[in-house]
Length: 484
Image 1 (tube, rainbow, N blue to C red):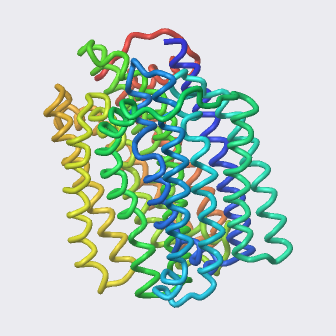
Image 2 (image 1 turned 30 degrees about the vertical axis):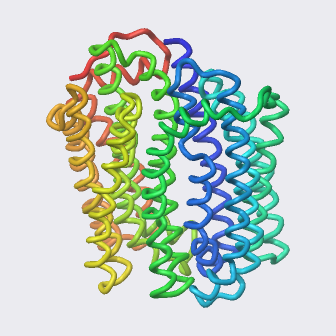
């Protein structure tokens, strides 16, 4: 329990601090560079992301889950990751002219060839991060991540001020990856001690290949919007969508990663104790919802004043997209935790099946919404997110007693509090801004003040047991897990 609490603390420090720094820097860069520059990088996102998935090949999850791992397993994963990273880079290097021709953006040739170096660099850190995660050593990861993010952010801002344009974003990505690899080797030196093992590879790839296929499908569809918008519309539209997507995804993904990185190894260790497993799972689900739901709802109702104040009028068309996508990503942690259970249970085959089902649904949504424009495409994502919850929880219920109804019973009180506080705040701020002070700062201030007060009050009134549990988690007091 102590190692879990300590792991949660340092995982939270790493994710929250690094994401906060990256968010602040991204906002500064957005003002300096504009939507078109972000759009160019956004067009390449799918190619880089898919290559990263291939490079990992599900080996990280396989190493974390396998309790009888050996040095041969780590060494095999290390060699394989680097080989695939180099192979993917060569493919992207020679494919760059075709990608540039597809988008009708000649500058993408050199941009892709340099940015893709990130894949090779990252391949050197995959095994080390897996070893640190297995050891629940999130403190070392936090130190390395924070230092690399701070320095690479400085590099990006310096390059942007010197008018390097899109290359400032490339410089940030490459320097961050390179520094992270160096710092992990300084803080936690590790080198492969054996050669490549066919037996180790067969096990790792046997489990990881199913996750690889699922991750590939997920990654392609996460980035397919940038591809379609870039082809059908313009780099500026890609930039607006990418910014709205990142701003809405970042808080949801950050909190999810904090919880997921700690609970995956923890749930793996207690998977045979059914009652303890389910208690811990439901508490994790509710804690994630308690934080992420109001955060995303608040971002949704505050999108316009937030964009106006932070990014400026040039980015205002992104506000409507941000408002919709924030609601879509509200359920992100719930999806991730449900899928986590399938990995813990060793059902990576079901994981893959789910991805195929959900991505088929997204394809239908895209066919319907593409002719209607970018806003309609975002609404399609929102509808898909809520349908995906029922699909995920249905399969989770088949391999545990955590049925959809049980999960809904745990989440609905929080959902109700968020809906009530969000609507009340939206109506109040709209009334004040419309009739008295039409000022984005006042608008944002009302939202940031009123909604948290109403929400916290409602939670204390309707779910005081959960509120108490959170205080115990924060102050690291021992408490009996409760679910309802």
